Image 1 (spheres, protein in one colour):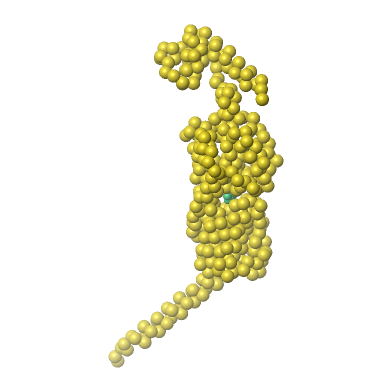
Image 2: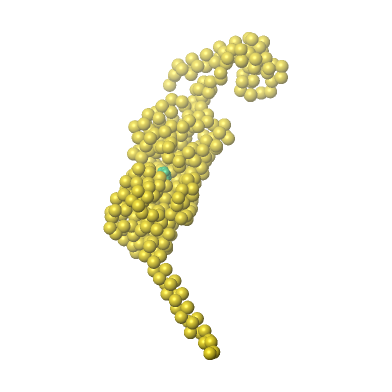
Amino acid sequence: MWRPWPLLVELTCMANMKEIARMAGVSLGTVSHVLNRSAPVREPLRRRVEEAVQAVGYQPSALARGLRRDKTNMIGMVIPDVTNPFFPAVVRGAEDTAFANGYRLVLCNTDNDHSKELVHLNELRTYLPSGLIVIPSDFSDLTRQAESYQKSGAAVVCVDRLPRRWHGDSVTAANEQGAYAAIRHLIQLGHRRIAAIAGPLHLTNSEQRLCGFRRAMAEAGLSVAPEYLQESSFDLAGGRSRAMLLLRMLPRPTAIFGGNDMIAMGVLQAIHELGLRCPEDVSVMGFDDLDFAALINPPLASVLQPGYQLGATAARILLDRVHGDDGPARHIVLPTELRIRESIAPPREVEARAGETRRNGTAARRRKTSIRKPRKKK
Ligand code: RIB
């Protein structure tokens, strides 16, 4: 399809370059070589061109260059919540990789609002990005939009949570295994009444974490009361309000697994507000292992997912696509790791039993010792 604007932008650039060539007294080709660093130019000529560039105030246009090849060196990144401390690490990983390879990242925040997400996607398209890295918003179903990007020749990689029916490149964490390991650990500590506050359950990662929870409980032969399963937004307020419900239940759960660290922080807040103690009354486990997890009181046990690596891997795959990799879709799953900290401990009953056993053992040992003690001769 013939489009007038590439021609217009190009004509404007050309006019500027001609002016520079005239002022510097060199050919148009020399100006182009200096601006694009496409061939060595003798120092005095280069200096004259640069002075003329300054005088004209010429600004090379990435868009004009992009129009010529239908793509710019820009990568769009769409994230759901810029205030959630997990996402900056993902962005940083993507940005470092993109920047090191000569690409620039443009960040869009959706506030977990799918309509805002669509506005970003439609607008980003007009900048002719080389590709798109997307962490879908809470209610997102962007498979159609993402596929249409791909049709226009832009690469798309989905990260962390996936749109339904997405068959393209993806990078996620081992959500199911991470949650499974966390719950197994709580069970090994002696917890039987374990509740979960999952993130939004239509999100693939929340669903997988809940599957890990259920698998660990089922394997240990433990049933889960339906009211012990709560769903929340991935934030502190959601975690706090669901924890208020759980902590008032009888019997109270002895441990609560938060679908992410922000939810777990909300649980800690509710415990504090109700005058309970963590881990003495309730153990709390999170997911993400944000930087602050180790710094709060008590330090939060969590499942580490490698945010930086998620972003860096997504950018790597995207750049491979831009440079011609047309192999089958890649689905990378990065490992998670359990981080045990002071927010978890054996439940009170188990502690009490252990204490009793310890006391009985000591008393028995004392009795034995006193029997063995030789009587003093009078
Ligand atoms: O904290 C943000 C959460 O939402 C993370 O657990 C991440 O996996 C995301 O989807």
